[in-house]
Length: 234
Length: 292
Image (cartoon, rainbow over all chains, first blue to last red):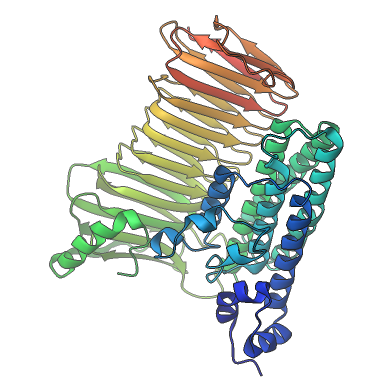
């Protein structure tokens, strides 16, 4: 029987991802499907990011992290570290290569929607791969394409997983809202599909990648909205 | 003070917390079976939050140091809670039982607030209308359209497919949607950042010196109107759509060799280039039109 609840597990997520796993956390992960899935997702994403970054060792742009972090805070998926004593900058500009999961520290104690949080994180990781070019280095189309494919695959899987998880819990939502949300989800999916095609055709086209980034972000955002409404109406 | 979530509100909440005992609930009397009227005395820069799943939310500024809430419920199956905590008034529409249908979960509000009030409005469907409120504003909807008039402050609006219109707005504007249309009419804002996916964007306002105007969509049309006396640097790019321009632009002194590599792009300065106008679309059309 687990002596730890989900919020306590979330507080230890950083240690878990670093390999420091308490007995209580192990028991909880064994018994809680959602927390186990979340931890596994983070590990997979972090590994993918490390593999991809190993190609060129780029430095994530502060603007990217700041933007995504603000979005996640707004959605209530992470807490605002600016209100905490801990130095925020190290978290805003994470160093995944040197400490694979350290930057998770403090981000997820207040997770309320694990599936959507995972999707947000997937977007974050993928974008860092997609949009952070190696400073001062030239890379060719094939490298851009490789980088893109490496990032898109887990991202798509994570968003699809979040979509399945979220949509399975919104059966009682207001039909007007449900129609609106689903129609707009279809719009975002279409945008993603077109942007992905465009990025495949012109991997180094920064604007196309930027639109793709926004479409992914919109999808994660929309899934959070759907998740909220489903929970509200249950 | 758990209701004081925003850091920007903390100082106000601390001050307001001292005043709680002296604040009076002036009246809380039902005017009709489904109409509820409540008044709250507030001090400067009160915060008003509204959470309504469905219905019209109309907010107007007045000169009194009071917030008056008039709520019309669609049925007795929903309750309207309006509570004051310090200088903050929280208004919530909630079901009174588990058997409430979506159609019953509706309330219409008319709310009068001091003009320096800060608003946080969540209204999933219906309509949001705010008139002459000068404080910061955060509006979040799914299908509800948002109509602001004579607003100022830091205005953040987010919808899924609700439209957005802003008449004579000032301050800073951040607007995002997936399929909502945006209209900025007679805007005097120094910062406009608008993004919609399939929606259209019309900007028919002033370009203030040092102002930044970023309009972006995926597949809708972007139309920007200018006057001969305006002054701005223009960057307009549509990856797969057309860019039509009626402004006579001077070429940029240091053109970016990569900037026009993809899609249809236009860069240059109109007059002294005091404001920055950045228009971007994936496959929509961009029109820069001379104002009649």
